[in-house]
Length: 311
Image (tube, rainbow, N blue to C red; front, side, top):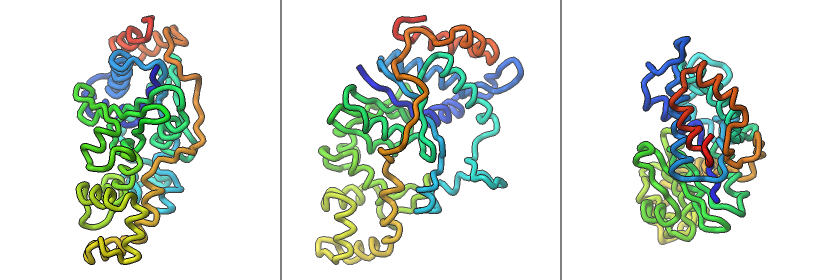
């Protein structure tokens, strides 16, 4: 019994860039992301055998509560010449997202989102709530390493940053070994480490001169980011003067970074339907219609075959 939580945007973006845009529907609409995402779900069902699955969505890819604290958050991804703060997304990907959602609905696979929050927050909230089954998060985003845990149920990240063929199953032991943080609090301490080192791709400046290794060493030595910040403020002798000055210079950033980086486990998640993986599509006729209209034949066939008892 396993709950699979899909970082949907991460997965369909990767499908879009992995497959050629020459994959098109009869009307010429590219469907490479649709086919790749559909095949990914089929692989998840076949290889991981989850009994429950939720495709988690971004209701707001750049939430106001984060940009109010840190205006640079994902600012470099905002599309040019727009006034609504829309994300810069390839023109040929945007029309494919509604097709993906239609297909998920027709198959009877659950989706979830939370108004004003990102998919990461939805995943974090659903994982936090889960007290019965092991959780597996499927994503190509390192930010979600923070959710790994052993109790009350295990939570692992199936990291597909290098593609499904090279997927890695990462839990507290693997995160601890990779980043040098204590295994007992590997998830929360990864979030502390990530806030400290920053991430240019997300507009997180971090503390100048601190990378993965130094961040992990400091977090491990002091036990948490909060304790490290306090040590810098109180001029703790365990911190060299140069490091204290770096942390003090970044005080404004460090005051808000934890809230920006950590997933919001209290996000008000709304789910489209129960998350049990169906043994047959909810609307077989609609599935067939979508497969024909968008030229999804082989991908849809593979997903049908991957359902727990076939179609």
